[in-house]
Every structure is written in structure tokens, then in C-alpha cells.
Length: 110
Ligand SMILES: [Zn+2]
Image (cartoon, protein in one colour):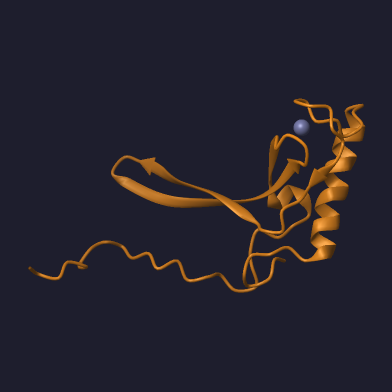
């Protein structure tokens, strides 16, 4: 589980890296970057998110997909995996305040 700042702890980074390496080896690759052939990947400590809107008629719901990134340390090619598939909890210890409101009733009346 990422800490309250959304940073992965070393055991989670290692678990994600092990999963990435396992899948690469299973498909017969030796971690080569498809762009430049480099074999060294970095795992940024932050758990990032893909955020979007799910629209169903008039209803709109926000969704957030927590992801772990693997970045080629030579060319920057980036692979994105859903955190839950990389042995990483998609939830932080304590979700940060988003500062978002519904937008309704927020006018100042002027
Ligand atoms: Zn590369």
C-alpha cells in the first residue's frame, strides 16, 4: 500500500518490478525497450492515476485508475500498468484531499 503521499515503499517497487520482469520473460523478451533496445527500466515511486469521466445518459461519474509506470532510462519509453495487476494496492494509506466540490451551490451570489 502506498504511503499517505502516494509513494510506493521499496517492497512494493520490488514486487511491481518482479511482475514486470516475469511477464517480459514469459513472452520471450529480456526486458528490451521496444524503442531503443535498452534493458534498464526505472519505476517512479509515485502511484499515478488515469482520471476520467464515465458518462451514462445525464449521469457523469468520475473514475480513477491507479497505475504503476515503467520508464526506460535511456529513451523515456513508458509502460503503464494498473496498480492492482502489479501487486500494488491502488489505495494510499490515507487518500489526499482533492479539494474538489460538486460545483453546485458554490457561487458567491454576485
Ligand atoms: Zn528505450
